[in-house]
Length: 250
Image 1 (cartoon, one colour):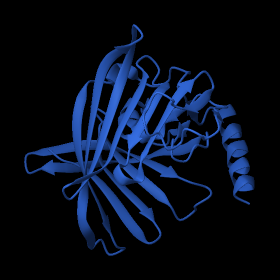
Image 2 (cartoon, one colour):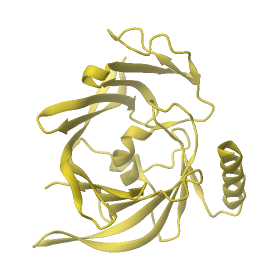
Image 3 (cartoon, rainbow, N blue to C red):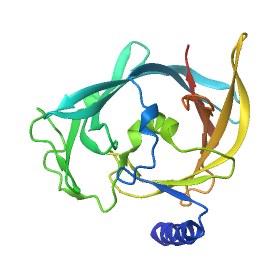
């Protein structure tokens, strides 16, 4: 049934695209505004609340960084993500992408006691990397990438690059998570604008970008993107009667 729903959504959105109502965003069609991509460091507080917005738990810290480099004499961008819970690093993730397109080249995630997963992206395939010690997915079969994917774990760095110009814009983004390796398009829509108070002195005009999933009708996520820089100021996500927030720390 999920496959039928997803196929229906793709067909519906394909018809919308033909009418000029939706943009498809991939690693090859040059629609991302990569001139906005900069070397940067960002820290987010990530926490859960119940449906009454009563906080549950102490929250986690996400440290993210973007660094320009070269690989095999070609320009690349390296993305780092460190996930800290209390005093423990529970995930340390490295992604390397082509700087000109954000096409994935390499992905490595160290989950501590849960082990290490690492992949190389070669042509139209995702292949377990045989150059990374203790790679727990080494025996996994190759995955065919039937669309030119973007790495979903880089979503907070990708949203600022979207060509947002007005409320009502829709995007089909070719995100794929290496932990759930199913290449697919995912729907996002600019649903409004809001002024976010960063501190007592600063207010930021933000676009509101909404992500929905046809296979999970009660799920949604709202991303508040600075109108000027595109950076993600906060995220509010709803699923299973709970909310998850990501808030940028300054």
